[in-house]
Length: 377
Image (cartoon, rainbow, N blue to C red; front, side, top):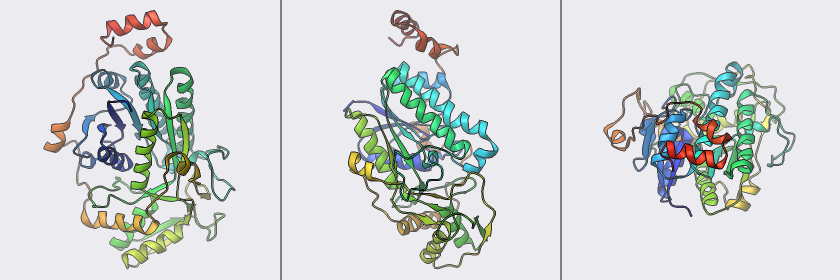
């Protein structure tokens, strides 16, 4: 296994922060890169170093890769809300595709050859199969799904061109929180049905289930759900596989089961013991009828199967919200003294935007000159 650090982009976000914690638990040295647009500095494990910045900043990436020995990247940074992607496709392609171009350019320039990429089951769109395998047809139904699929293709192309190996995870709906209730899901506006329903149950406020005419057993969307800790464990296993020389792969992560939105609402009510005031609303743009994943390949290649069921996902989310009335509080631009101690301050080390294009187009002799001039040799 290579000796160095793992860069986690979006490591202050919901899934990223849990992955960082699991990486640290597994003994890896971790650097988090996050612009805190939706992430929270308080969610970052105290054992990780922190860089506040944007993954699309090539100069920042160059400085970071130059001064640190980064042997692998976990790419979580990006946008995830399907209906928003329909209204703002440019923003989604910028965050979900352009950002991947930037990180791959930095990896190429600095000989980092391992990337674990957070993709999505939305690349499949609606499927007639009861359980979707990795060989299922790819026909995303939203700009979000298309932006992720475009990034997947780019990552795969970079293996043939530059030797950058990958483990791409296509996963479905994620829920739950850390077992100690210290970190969990906290978005400015919640759109995922489990936290939305838990909030409605605890507050007594009304909520809507969007659509009741889908081709499912009760007319509401049917989705696969996995616990965020199971998901984080899979990402650690994926990185371990690459660092030990394993081949590139694309893997679905799911429970091989499905629950409808209506069933989610009913289960939340059972866990909290409180009534939920809900009504049906209109369909949301881009939502598919049913998406459930086969996890056979994950079990075969990684020895991974989910350990936590739907009821535990909901129970952990409830515990997290009851323990933190204001979740992470008003984060703003203020960093706690603890985070400041771990903060790595980088200033862009390049003063021209064509640096990476030069590297990509240069022959070997020219490449040596560029590296020498920029102190990369």
